[in-house]
Image (tube, rainbow, N blue to C red; front, top):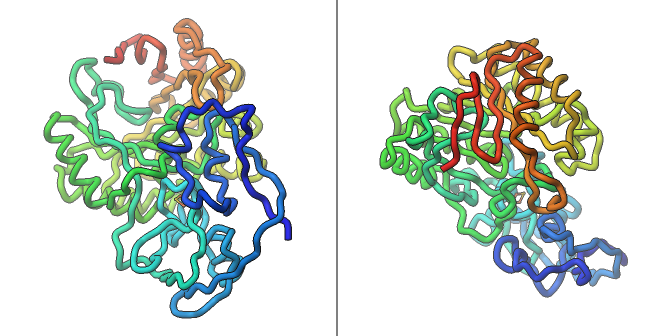
Length: 409
Ligand code: FES
């Protein structure tokens, strides 16, 4: 029988150590085709090949029922292909396949009495799997907390005074996009660090917020929204521990922020959302995000723009909204920047817009970081469309309305 497996492409491998320290293989002696190493290798030194698979079958028990499944595929595949169990899509309320790289823990089920990720785990003989996970606190890999002087696209620009910490922030692992120039890839693809429960993360971030006297707390990533249960419980736990005046900021790509999800976030205490559609055209979005499925890219981009409209229309009085775009001449044209500007201005000219200057990193070390003058040109183009609150990230810090500068410390 033939199957797809991943092998090392030694011509590309730089021995950077990423696959032995940040995103490791959980079945090193037998590739199970999870593709985590394929997605995460910064030098693309992994290739997918068709090769014979060892179709040895093992017995597993799912909610007490015995099944016979191959041992050299992921448990997710075994459950869906052989046991009739359906996992959700990113942002579902049920266990879901979201990042596929072991960081988000949204796919975790109870395996032999402990939560474990089914996207990167293989079936073992005698394994006992429980699919109702509610009795366990959800988990997720978290980096931080640490205090931040600048904040994100949703941080109200006037709160930043260049000197004091504005937010206590955490960054969570796992993302549903595959941006070749991922600006945070060592967190996004971390599948090694010990995961935390929402309560543990809330206790840590609230301590950091009090210690550094910040005006807000923030969660970024990776993509926070892909483990929905974890994120909602995180905001609930934070909200129990801080004054209602404290800003509770979600920094998201917006791809799965449907109205019901936004409603749930606001009910759980989130009062500040940054949404990053990045651009307006599907082909540009595919280039930026590394998505190869046109329909999925279109759906994600549409959902992100609809999230901007919904938050503005439904929650202007409760939620401070920021919109994120990106600029690098190799990824998006100035004409498209102008189109994005018109789209936002048609909702409200006052909406805060932050443009990130994408720099060379991860798999796009060939691009050049935009110059300050290029970013000032982006800012002018957006302002020419009528926008009144444009901030551009530059190599010398953030430059905002009336050329107000936030300098990186
Ligand atoms: S989908 Fe398994 S950890 Fe993210």
